[in-house]
Each structure stands twice: as C-alpha cells, then as structure tokens.
Length: 54
Image (cartoon, rainbow, N blue to C red; front, side, top):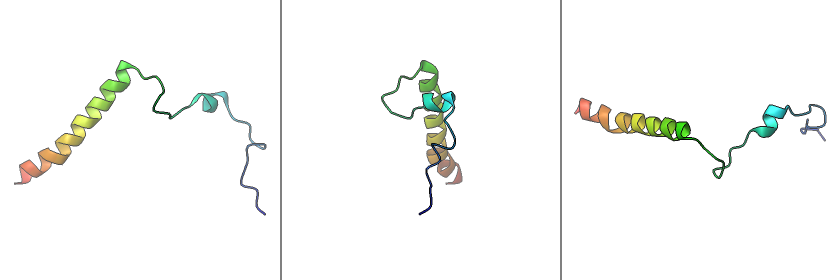
C-alpha cells in the first residue's frame, strides 16, 4: 500500500498552521473592499460586455 500521508516526513511550517479558510474567520474592511471590487468587475464583465456588443 502506498503511503500518501507525508505529515510525519515533512513537519508543517508555522505559517501553514495559521492559514484558515473558514467563512467564520475574522476579516477586515480591506477584505470587504477587495471583495466589493471583485464583484463590481464581475458585474461589469457580465453586463457591460454584452451591452457593448449589442
């Protein structure tokens, strides 16, 4: 059986241990602003390009 679990061979860095992706994690106003900009760009692509091509 192949051993796919390398946890015992390669200890985790402390930076990796601090990384989380849970939606309950704290976020800053900067994170909200970046999300808003990404949303606006997405809306511009979805609605702006077809409007320009029509």
